Length: 324
Ligand SMILES: Nc1nc2c(c(=O)[nH]1)N[C@H]1C(S)=C(S)[C@@H](COP(=O)(O)O)O[C@H]1N2
Ligand SMILES: [Mo]
Image (cartoon, rainbow, N blue to C red; front, side, top):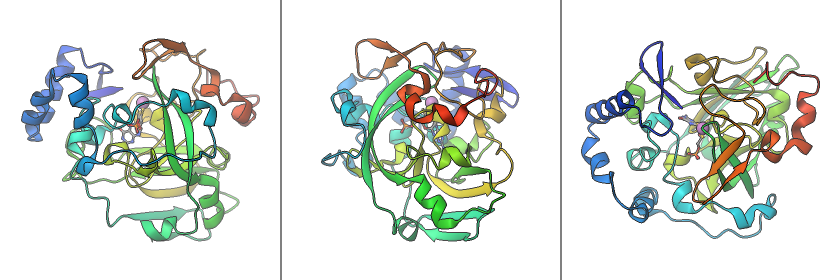
C-alpha cells in the first residue's frame, strides 16, 4: 500500500521496486534485527518460500469439510502457501513476505478483547469467553486487495451481527471501530511511523450487521496463522482487504465515523467505505482488473467484489465515487 518514510511523505510500495522504498525496508529490517533472515529469503525459489510461510510451528492447513457459504468458489481456492506467505500486515514489515517469518514468535495467548463505547454490555473478554456463545462456520470468500490482486480464502468465523446483538448497542450507536494490538516489542513495524499506530478500521453499524461480515479466528479449517491476523480479525468481503482489521483488541461502538489508519495516512487514496468498485480507480492502481495470486491470468473486478446482490442496498442513493 504505502509507506510513510518521514511523516507526511508517502511513497508507493506495492511491489517494492522503488529504490527509496527498498532502502527504507532494509533500514527497517536492519533496525529490527531482521535483515539476515530477510536477505536469506531473497531469490529463493517459490516453493521454498511457500514452505517458509507455512506458519508458526510449521502449521499446515486443517481439513476443510462442508462450507456454509461460497461452495461455488471451492475450485478457485488460493493455495494455503500463498494465503499464509503473501500478506499485508505492516506491524510485521511492509513486504508481502515479511509477516510470516516476523510474526512467528507473536504471542496470541492470553488475549483480551475490550468491547466498549455506546453499548449496554461493555466488557473485557478473554478470547475464550468472547468466542464461547458463537458457533464457527467455514465460508469461502473472495479477498480483494486495493493493490489489485486477489485470492479466494476459506475463513472460519462467526457473523459479526451475533456479537453486535450480544453486547446490545445503544440506539445512538451508528458505527463500530476496530483496533489492532499496540505492542512495538512484538510488532517491529510499530517502531516506525509507517502508519499512525495502532491500526484502526471502522464500519457503519448496518454494514457490521450484514450477514456477510465475519469475525474470523481461522482459515483452511485451522486456527489463523499469526501473519493472517491471529487470534481474531474481521472480514468484510465486499470491501478492499484493508478494511479487515487483524489481531483485534478493541471493538468500540460510536456515534461518529471512526478515523481509520489508512485514511489518516492518505485520505485521497483510502476512503472510509472502500467498497470494491471497478469504476473508481485508486490514484496508483486501476481497480478494473485483479491479478489472481497463484493463478496465471488476471480477471475483471466485479462491483462489490461480486457480492452486489447482497450488499448494494446498503448504499442506495449514495455517490460511491464521492464515498470511496
Ligand atoms: N493490523 C493490520 N490489519 C491489516 C493490515 C495491516 O497492515 N495491519 N493490512 C490489511 C490489508 S491491506 C489486507 S489486503 C489484509 C490482508 O490479509 P491477509 O494477509 O490475511 O491476506 O489485511 C488487512 N488488515
Ligand atoms: Mo490490501
